[in-house]
Length: 259
Image (cartoon, rainbow, N blue to C red; front, top):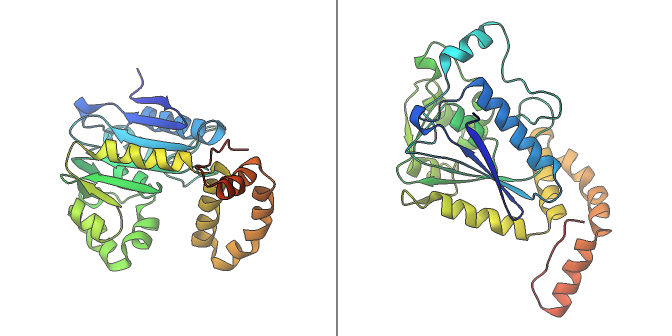
């Protein structure tokens, strides 16, 4: 039985973590199923955006440490197979289309780390975040040491990485880690609303926004500048670019096809 379920909702791939009885503890098998879901999102031209969420009271209370400890102690980490996409964005190509994430209750360890590799985040007002690794004798290895200081600020990140203390949805919003805080129970509806707005936008434009902003972040502004008009040339030759111009002239909503 897989605890990662996928469902197509129009152009949105909904990815559900479904192991509520274990507080959605991440096993190695679940990680690989997530990698396959992210690969499906990136590969299928009909899919334009991912929606990641979890069943139950909590998004996750952490990993199944007893199953991951032998992997970590062997010097190995979160490895993906051929054609899969690392949901933590550490190995191989990252997902090429945006992912919107909804969370509630506990969102600990790997929940924070997968959040850091998504584009838009919606938290229920009862969400608590924590990086607990230093309380378990290890340290984060799914991207938090790389991205939490970037996205939260150096000292803010160290405050939580070095202590394992939790922080609230409201604090996450104040620091820019989440974009919406909604009453508990409404987080999936809000995240789905945002995902559907992204899915209505021009897919090639959206994917190039993601590419350009990532390039600027990881390799610097100049690297991104050098690609801007080369990538724009390809987009401008698309049917969607023509549709964008025609919808502007005709004063109507554009209908994009992703080509």
